[in-house]
Image (cartoon, rainbow, N blue to C red; front, side):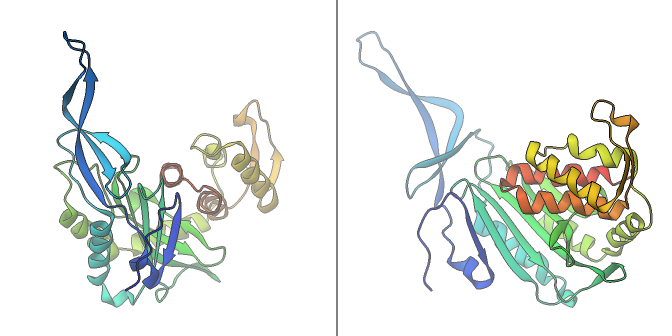
Length: 287
């Protein structure tokens, strides 16, 4: 098998090409510093309880961690996610996509189950997804989340508290077998998620949901784009930038929810910020 060895700041692959991606050759090394001595000859002294995660192919450092850090490679994370999927063969064969950023320091890996249709409202179909996040630079915890891929506008949809989710930092408590049990159980109870999405499609958005995009991590340009979509898809009777409580907006909650998730998945390239924003969106719409 031909393997791609180029080290890029960002990379993406789909299907069998994932197996050809370049993954950092990670290792953990001790951390030391030079300090002066009485004979004027600096000495190299090891810093206790400190290690650095590096790519051994080019000595690129990802993060400084403590002795309790548990190394889990991206390849192991992908293998475990594939094992989780195989536990539910009734969902069919999913498509696979992988994203990496920070020269391989961050990973997002997604299975999309295109053979399973959940109709939220007539003509509005969602396919289940399993997304896995991991990082060597410690910006992302090891995390598996069940979500949805909305066919009509190709945006990711995740509703946090009612989804099966496993999240752990890379410490001694990291247990990929526990993640597997949690997610498989969630996959078998996926109807809970679609019931929530259907409830959004059957009601108007609350004011706090309309205002939420200004406080969950979107930047200025993203907020401008979201406000434009709200005005196009809803009816804005009053929009006060100084006093948000005076706003009067009539928009369907499912439409608003997908405005937010579309912006997050289409225009937020940084995986850390994207994960933070999608979690904020999920929490906004769970009552």
